[in-house]
Image (tube, rainbow, N blue to C red; front, side):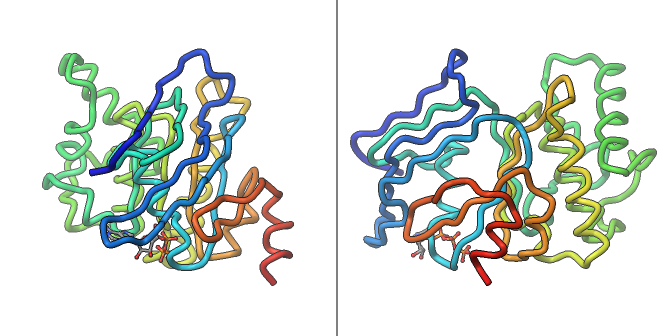
Length: 232
Ligand SMILES: Nc1ncnc2c1ncn2[C@@H]1O[C@H](COP(=O)(O)OP(=O)(O)OP(=O)(O)O)[C@@H](O)[C@H]1O
């Protein structure tokens, strides 16, 4: 997919973790989904995107994750991305929690290291000792947390979360938000950078910054409270 010219750069020397310069993308059907979109995420943290249906948010995530290539502009990314979707059933593949996580782990680990990593990532998302649990017995919220554990097991440090709580109740929503806030804290040794698309405005109270997507462009970063005020 994609066209000319396209350029995705990986840069360890970049001072920003993720920068997009003048990215445009039109789907084959002719829809211009992104139109000269530019922004930077300067530090790790939990960053949220809001915007009307069709404003280009999911297309943006497909570009950052490398599933499609920009038709013009430049993506500079020094992080390893992982995409998380609304419905965890679209991401979980194997029958048990441990076997599913195994798929995401780096291949060079030995058995003991794999088991330790699986236990660690399950603990990280509040699913301690659930290695042998069949996935079909998990609640929707637990499945979404397992999908998150899979992203972390793959050593991704840029999580692209496309409405990850859209199908969840309030309590499961809060547990995912709490985990994301915890693993993206700047005081950690290796904090995660999370970009989170939401239509649930109450979620903006959890973020380090939020921006509004309009007609294929992302606006400037504000606090979550400021964005809630603008959208009222
Ligand atoms: N696979 C595709 N093929 C063709 N057009 C697409 C495709 N995906 C998205 N589009 C179009 O690109 C535009 C932007 O869509 P996109 O899904 O990126 O917006 P969005 O902001 O994520 O919307 P929503 O909030 O509804 O998820 C829309 O006009 C959409 O119809």
